[in-house]
Image (cartoon, rainbow, N blue to C red; front, top):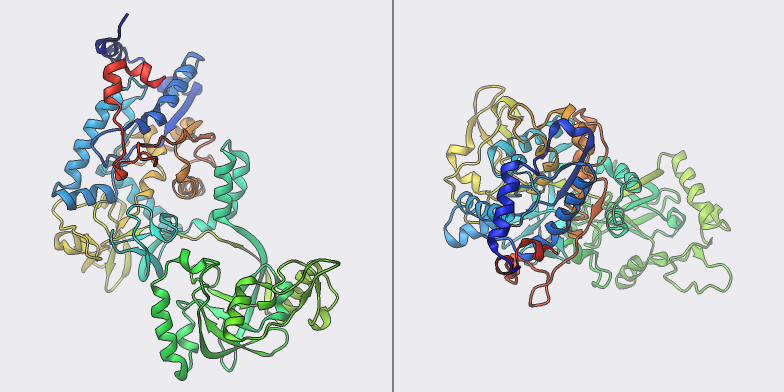
Length: 600
């Protein structure tokens, strides 16, 4: 029998009328939560890449229903973000209007798919009924010391005119527009994800995720064990700390390096070196973190004129600044051991600094400098003859006697920068008062609504700052005139907890009912792209753990089992993407062969 489009329509109408795929809360004891990463309505249509994501999950859901599970399979839209705003700047169509229109089109396409989604549980993140709870989440994190504000060097995309998290910078370029990223100092809001670094590592062992994805997260979190060593600035009651995993090389330190942005630099720089240091700081500001960490990049630096005191020998060692050290990583200070670190060796050779050997290889091993392996200590005073393994502990013990060092665990993971200088996002629920300082918006005043009538052509300033109606408010503490925070939240905040809101999407009193959420969560099967390993998937795990510790849920992990559906390439051989213009619409194939054949 030849395919008729009406066949699809007939059965889809029947499913709708009978409520065949509606989730029945009464059967929650048999629940199975199946979820895909929700789509972003930046373009008017779904493409076949979405089908590649949603088709297999839909088939799996059907099988599980036949096996007796009460499948919870919701769908929604990750609707805030740069693409809609950039589209508005280009066309003059407001993001709210284009997003609503795109969602209507994509909903129709998803229904046409004949998938088993239960639309009663839909969420749309740009709707105030959703982003009110983004703001609630921000306030709860702030109350519990997990949201804070500080000035910091940040990644800045000059084309998108906004801050980017480290995870959104790919090889020194903006992941969205591929513009080269520069560094700027700005006062920003951060979420303290590093407070959960160890648990984020530990719990990877208990979830059913692809090993590649676990490896990406482990590398991104980057746990290392070593010693934190305290250096005194010569002639001043000032101290700084370095972290090293190679305390055995401490006797080979011939200089120390601070990041150009490190707050101590201005204080210790001598008048004679001030001009050179300021010029170098300007130079370093133009390079991205990725470029600065590149092992192939020529080493540069400037002497500050100041000296540090070696914590064991008491000798003076020069303090330099160099852009291969980052203020955002570790303490922003490193000890230079040129004989036993390739980067330090290159730096010392260029600037003619001493390169004394303090580790010698054992046996026939090639120990030409720089020698970076473990060995036996030489030229190290009373530590001579010890193996590197022995010296790691003995030298740290010696430092501890004089309060000059201790064992420490360090993480590569940085706190999550959530401020964005763009319009189309969740307004940050903070008020700035001259008298009271930073004041959270009271919960009863949520949501802080995103105004419709705003000039959002990017110029480096937050668009909301241009709206007097939005900015001007009253301090909830003292009643005096005050200003709202002009930034919006990173849109990854929306997707960091959406899987919780699906289950209780009509709740107007709280983001979700605690008892109900513990019945329906965690998600048993989650499907989406591996490109989210160090962003969305990491952030969602952090938010789940933070909410657990605040008493809002009882489970540890949001997604018990994760599957990556893979990638469909466009005609240009690149990943199918609206931004690349290489997408293929599924509509033609559905019209010709029907949704079941196309899914197969």
